[in-house]
Image (cartoon, rainbow, N blue to C red; front, top):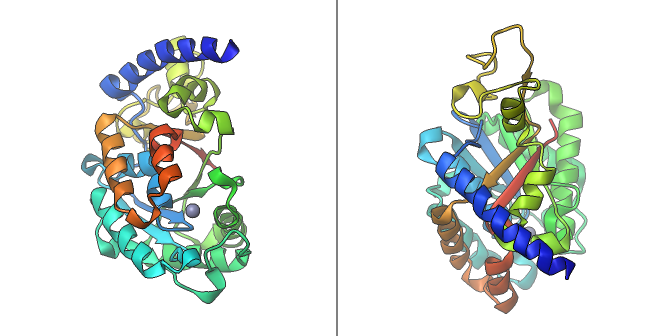
Length: 293
Ligand SMILES: [Zn+2]
């Protein structure tokens, strides 16, 4: 009964939310004109979990340089070479070329739920990659790794090591992690949007603008750009500008189609439960990123 009530509530509210997101684009990303690294553990993570993020950040009008660092070849079932090619093709769907991608294929970073990766090694690899490509924004999994996979969690722990060790001598200014939600919320696709909006800090500027409490950075345009802090601003230089700690990406239909097309490139992975995942997973349509640095 409670579930039905939520479903009805979610349907109505989701429609309203989607209208706002797709027609108003009021949550235009503040990440523009910047070099971004997405760090993933396996080929297919980029679309199964980060599809909305990739679709948004690679939009040409933002002028971002998006690169992907994949820490393993996904060779758990001996399909490493196939999966590397699939990742290249998947990224093409987002307009990224092969030279935007680095896949590490190392003995000490093997794909597998029982493979414990050395966190300093992961952090060091992030640092080398950031240095090589003058990365300013780094994005990876959070401490629960969305699916709980050991290698996903190692990405987060590696990031923690990276922040602790290299914070003062890196080009990276911002680190974001992809928020893990509960199992129920994970599999209700876009119907999770109302719950997401309820709990996210990403809407802080919107709430602030509507209520007049606090001074929020403008929601649209360069004033909200964290790469250009101080430029413009909504209330003059003496007012404190709120910048949300979270980023929220909600894919419009073309971006969902784009992510599904990218997922199709991972042919070797398209077993029945992943086909269900593509339809039901919230991560194919909604990404919420939490800033950790
Ligand atoms: Zn993975």
